[in-house]
Length: 255
Image (tube, rainbow, N blue to C red; front, top):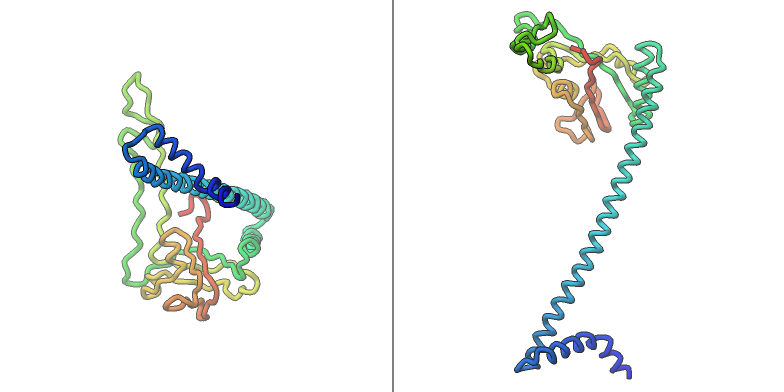
């Protein structure tokens, strides 16, 4: 009974379907036909099993992606809330000094950075005999636009004028001769105030991470300064940990 049950549960469905096919087709060599039928049956069953596994994998992957998206949405919500809280805190300050000092403490709290500094970019005089600073070129308006009148003057009568011309926003040019002067720092680094980093043109071509960020107009992050070659040195002292620089415009019309 046990053997019969085993055969019935394992090969019974395949043999039953195969024999039904033999009876329906009635081939000249039924044994050979049944053998080939069983091989095809196995191939089909393997494909079905693979399809089930693929579906299960796809469902798990979809669940993983959905979970990641939900985590991102939650994180974005947290970041938005924290950003709004920071804005509200900074908006309450009544002076520039208090604003920057509050900004420093807020950044330390939100980023867990031990040290935060604020430096201002200040232009310097060109050294004697050096080439002067290049002048910034103004953007000329297109033909037909009157800057004085603020309108197009070459539109044929009866036709609608094009939209008003808006001068393109030009990013401020970084002066060749300038310095980053530390104006604000957290209390433990108050000694930094007044110190400066000279631009490469004023420091015999010495490049710094801070001026790299300013010139490229993008944030720069050094994950581990001890692994840099040569190592970063901060005003004569080795700088452990990580180092990040983020250049910002003081205002929308900052030049």
